[in-house]
Length: 166
Image 1: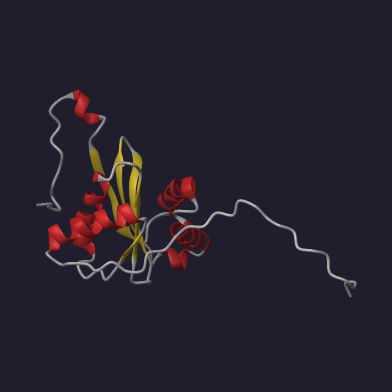
Image 2 (image 1 turned 90 degrees about the vertical axis):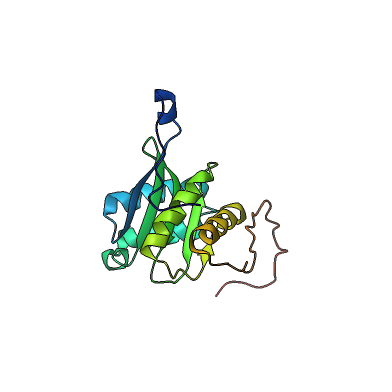
């Protein structure tokens, strides 16, 4: 069972490179943390478009930043997973290839918002979050609407139209 106070025991120096650290979970994050999370989210803007939008707004509107909740899990100081929530009731989550970081996020988020109504994110990360949430809280989630990310690969020019601009 996943517990909020679960901490990885370091048995050797080799374990240090794989240890996940819970670093940040707070409302009203400082500008430096918001910038760092924005840089991380911008590595894959198509996947993290909601996060990028919220973090960018938080940088330009300090009042909005005060409504923001951020939780990060790190490895050797680098963000491995990010959870983000504004006044909008849904939590947005994402992670790098290390999905164990999602379970650490669940432990943080459950402490701060045990009544979380919904989580958004890439399918693998959102499913992993829901499974860990169920293990920790005994609450069962229901999958919502699956959405896709579209990529424009070609632009086809339209035929010219008769007439002139006014």
